[in-house]
Amino acid sequence: MRSFPEDRAFVVRGSLAGVVFTFAFGVLGYFLFPVTIPQTDSILTRLVYTIRWQMLPAFSLLTGVLCVMYKRFQSSAINPVLGRGEHIIEIHQRYIRNTTEQLVLHVIGQLVLCTYLTSQTLVVIPVCSLLFVIGRMTFWVGYIREPLKRMFGFMITFSMTSGCLLYSFFCFLMSGPTFALHE
Image (cartoon, rainbow, N blue to C red; front, side):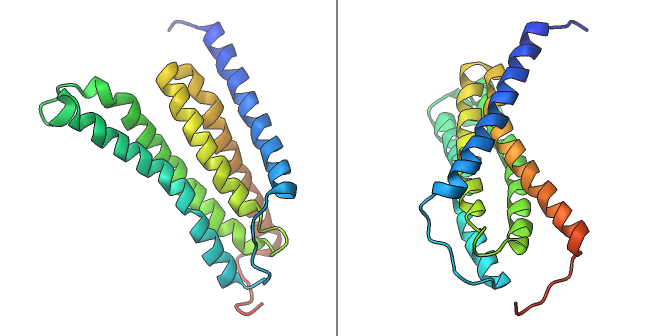
């Protein structure tokens, strides 16, 4: 197996840059993001608020599907059974597949996380949703330009989602799965 140390170094730099961007955007967004937050600690209200914010990340997936649809319609890849022109949509299909995987983790992470947040900390939800979109778009653009450049965007999405899941898991370990239905 051949080793490509320059490629690995480039990917590591992209990964670190993505994590640093996520952290900086997250902190600034937490304190500066101008969004209306529900002023109640009702779990139901937090869940509805969180579900509604998942519309933005879902558009990242919808955009990829629309792109493949358009590219198929405009090229020899119009009939996927024949296998002609599949190279035209390969990167976009990979984007859709990875975005679907990331979106499932993101939505689960956000839904669990919002049950541990208060109305004062709920701003994390829209900040994470925007980070998801930024991460997916930079992943896609990087992938199109040069596949190794996708790591910056991947790490924005992955580190944010991992952070939410890890924090939720920590809260789960500390307080358990139970909650009061009427807080």
